[in-house]
Length: 165
Image (cartoon, rainbow, N blue to C red; front, side, top):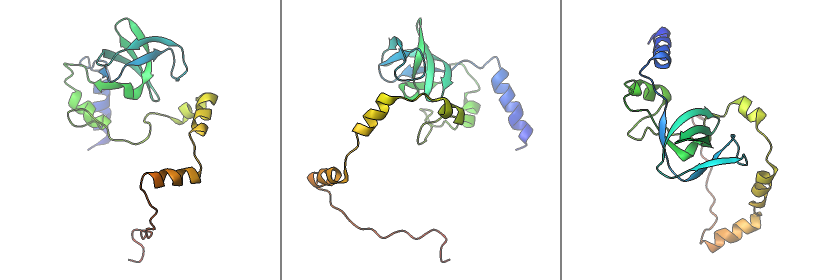
């Protein structure tokens, strides 16, 4: 397809009066935060199955409105849906990689973190300590594996694809 086709499609999606803000459903009860970090001030709460309007996305956070409350929640707290009556839903789904009845995107890691987000992320000492406290020694890991009936096995390395051909 010609590159100008994608430019026209993008402009249509962004400028069309048929486009409406994303909506969603809360997947689990959560607290609304004043900003995009875990220890930000709590400004409200949402309950499972609450309908919300998605106002903005920043890194792994969504700014949502539920009734008269507005705040930030983690991206995975909300199941996103396109607003009803949006005739451009198919084009948007194709452009964003969403597919199937649940508009699921298969991915690993956290989507949406830019290099700038990572550069400006605040250091969280308490979370770093919690992570360090969750570590165990090799001996503790071996004891855990043994208690679970696991045993060590040696496996040969796979050959490098294309090597020796």
